[in-house]
Length: 349
Image (cartoon, rainbow, N blue to C red; front, side, top):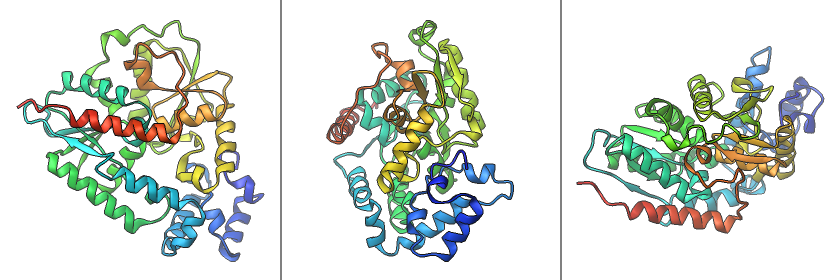
């Protein structure tokens, strides 16, 4: 109960919630209030997967688009159609180098936040992994979170087609949703977290010791990679290399709490999402919260603290420890700019 964004809004106990959910109509309000963060099944002593129950319900409601649109699916449809359009997505394959089988996938949120950061990271990867390509594409998670599996499968197939056209058998992801989506639905593709790769190849020399005098920050683990222990360990190793002083949330790693943006909650139940953002952000006395997910970093800022992305701390020497607040139009412009920068890259043939 304590860790769930939704339970206290609907019930006084999990048992009563399930009873209400299975006996009262409409139950769609409860289903679309689930953040799909996975904490419930981890914490429940009876191993009941509440998220699984709600996900199954969403899938049944997806057959009626009127119900989905009631919970913000119209905005998700626009987002996803745009994300997969040629205006905001592209690929670039390189034909020479030891790593032509690899592709870097920054994800939607990071491209929307900072095109220059995406390309700084990619340029560094090229120096360490010669021939690595790059793909700006969505993994389709927003559609899947709304329960529309038919449309998700269409989007996922397009992503796999794009990766196949690049000859990419290994994908390096900066986004935790992309990591889990590809790991789950494309098991034939090798998935590597960018943070694990950086741990392996090392950080730019300029990044080391830059932050040893930085005030204490709190580290927030994204919930999609709740059980990815290697990513947890590698992120902390990177922070140690940076000599960045940080503290753990009480609920961290596999017990981490949702930042408030999980399950498209901000689209389906905005008030609930914002309440969770504030709750999570104020579970630390630190004014700055670092995460390795851009959606989480933005949620911590919306929650009243200073959300920071780990990649800014590594690759952006001009970063002043505060993300610039950006509106929807600016984010789409950033994604277009990132796409244009990728398209302008020259093959090394």
